[in-house]
Length: 429
Image (tube, rainbow, N blue to C red; front, side, top):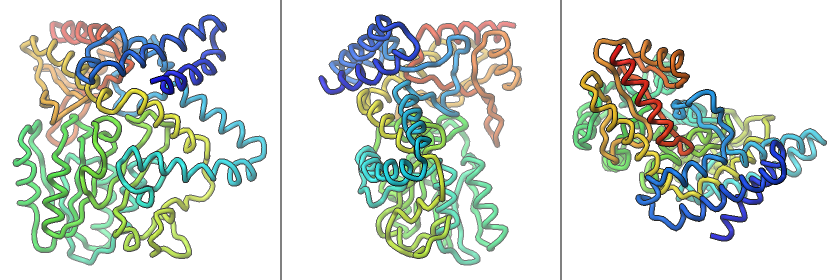
């Protein structure tokens, strides 16, 4: 408890002094750190609906008051402590780039790898640091040996970058994609399992599994799918762009073969930071996206040969992990689910509103989706922003047509009341 308080007071004391008078900076620091201590005295469920404490925790962020940002699923803001870490490392790099970048900051990758591995519940020898989920899964798509006629099972609700990657390999090498088209929302694991099994043949080599669908927030039973794949001798690849540091789980819980995520989403790490996991016995058999002298080595670091890159965002991942751990993964998940349930329950009273997500906690968390009868979802999102300065995103993908709403831990119920009122006024008009 004391160490967590010291972390916040030190971090936000420095941050606040840059923009506030010393008195106000100190008050802000103490408010955030004291709120953190109070949150940690509560169970995750009890903490979830304590709006006052979370409003005080929101002081850790620098989000604008002029826009109500409910599209945190696209990319999350970084708390001030992470922003300041990026600045420090960046300015240090510029003092003598080749010395501070490669002789100092580069040495921080191994401690950072261990912190990520601890957060993920796996060995540090299975974790590589990269830039985003697309890079991680692209490495898997092109790095796994396949023969003409080998098959991949994936859904039409998977992320476009991953779909395009597999389609390109299909065009170039003659592998085959067996498609699943999910009818969302789904609150039955067996429906999803059956869909994957029905699309599988003796030639199936890979199951591509999106843990949490970007379009609606649907959580798929990734652990069960990975277990079923392993039983059948099929490789499991998990796209966890939206689930990592959002839903409280460990990679080891899934027991997948490959896993990729973007840390600039729910971990609130610097933009353009990501992580990949490859099960130890698969590393040697996987080719790196950027070639090295020993591409078939069993060293996970072969996947980090990116050439010159900025070390500042990478090293500031450590501060994002500290911030996440200070709050607690389960406490964060419960608050995010509470916020989604809060606005969904309120607008559910409107007969014109339709939901595209299950409200059960095992099938959704922060992301929620809705539509209004008789209205184009693009028009709804446009009205929310132009008339009420509320930023959401409209989704039109396959069989999904909805407005996606994504609060974060700095979002208060007062903010959501503003959103609820706007939705009801738009529906009435």
